[in-house]
Length: 457
Image (cartoon, rainbow, N blue to C red):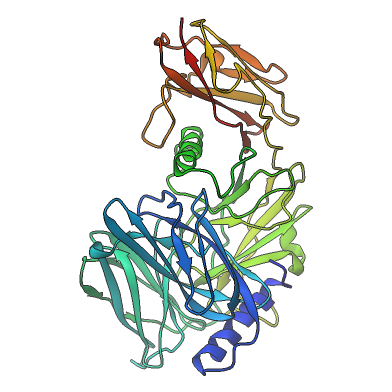
């Protein structure tokens, strides 16, 4: 995010809110990046995404999108797709900054006939409406959001019915109010909030910041199929069973592969928190330099952030810190923000080579093939995974059956081959296999292309 300090990010947000509410002229233009998913957090490929009067685009192979040349201010980003015989739609309200990218604008799609809404009022302790308050409904990737009008009224639409949502109302100078709201399809659910006055409060420091890096194979582009999207996600979930939702990916490295850096931290209830400041630098303690602020994540329910910077490069170590921004935050002095979190570092691996043996698409006659790949600089171990059929989220691997007991399917660098010792191969069956390279600490991973062979004895 090419802006100055976090303080400027927050101050600009207040200014844009005032400009939008007062009908001021929109001059500057920015971009919106995000992901379109279903209720399970799985990406929706080929969804139409648009802002009225500002163009449209389609989601790519990992469900992500980038809208450019969007006027600054609060904008409704809409998405739609035809899945099966049903129309699926979704909407997200995001804040666009001039000459910048608004990140993590994630949209949840669900069948139109299963959608409900939440609406109500946000009031101060004296029963007066609070204009410009934000109301967040927590979702699988990020929160759906609405902004109150001059009467304190808000409405969040496009929510999947039959689910309980954590909903938080938040406004500078006030303590948050949180409720659990059940959404019913086809009708609005009422939920109003009363915010207490905040005075001199500082939110808790985010704890246990962690960074995980994925480098995807070359050739993963907009032309890739939805099946390939599911295959890559299936592999990631096998490696990381806690990965229950997609992380946003939006850029191509100079080598032509996609890099995803996920930041996560412990979520704790805190009525004093407006959101989070995200910092990145080339040395430890990046929050000590205000201009290292890359985003102001204005979501008190958040516990993850995907770094989407176009300058991320394999082999470069990046350091991250996160702080919590409080209800009494002062953009001029920085007062009212928590201390920075612990440092988390990330060093992306290079993409894996396209070389494999057996060659991709080969026919083999041996029931115990030797699987071989090119070594990767920076790798410490390799995990081979073989599937009986094209991998997807609902298909378990054939070998190894248990990644916690991998046997010889896990290989230490510089070794770059292993002999298949899994269940008997079946004549005429096509098998798919992949190699995941790990750094020594396991936090950087690089996924090979998906290779296949057919067994014909």
